[in-house]
Figure 1 (spheres, rainbow, N blue to C red):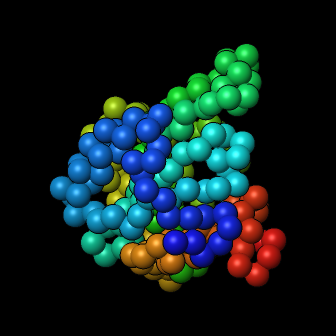
Figure 2 (cartoon, rainbow, N blue to C red; figure 1 turned 90 degrees about the vertical axis):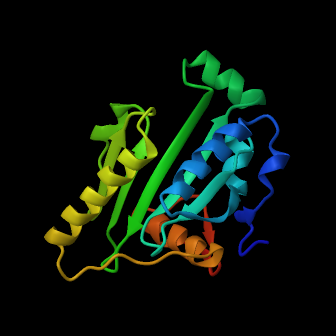
Length: 190
């Protein structure tokens, strides 16, 4: 299924070079916290450069928190470039996102804190947590950031994302907020 040429639903088991047990294990942990599967999703345009990767995408019961679980593993020329420049060629991450009615965004992502000082667009709040954080603890960190955002923006409310189509629409809104990307909206370049 596809709503654009850039974002497509895929079957995760096709990606045998990735650590599929990481996806399954992590998704099971989120399921224990009440999250359900939206789908396994590939950004086709990104896969052309970074090597094929998919994101297992899930949502909380009320749809206000979306999680993306992914394992990026460079292959081919991208592997050579990353190796040559000393970049990681394999990383396993989790990202929680909440989008708001006023255009704001809170996201919590596992990884190194090196990117913490990058400038973010107005209305975007980012929290980087360690890769070994427990899922339950990561959710709690994210909920606290959402609570803080809502206290600072009392007219805003968290949007509910519960389907593949609503997730894709959210991705286009988020990419526009972040200053555009290589993703093409249904209406053309966005």
